[in-house]
Figure 1 (cartoon, rainbow, N blue to C red):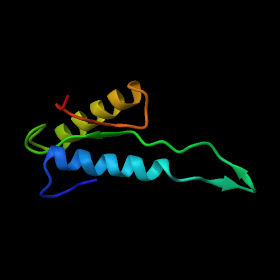
Figure 2: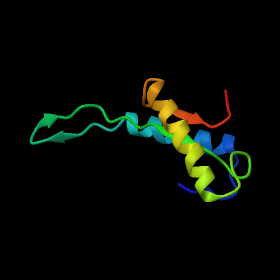
Figure 3: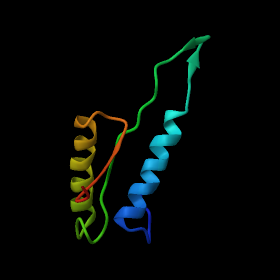
Length: 81
């Protein structure tokens, strides 16, 4: 997602809201419940984490993998503790 006029903290909060919303989704197929849906997200922001699209995507991708390694179903924002 591209969120114009949002800083890293705002973007991370929006991503967290999406993770929470996805947690509430329950799917079934032919009457059988499917497993829980999870969402992991990596977040980066211009110019704090990069000066061009390729760099921002690379940083967000690294944050995504950190989210997955941290247990999935979470948001990791590049450079935030």
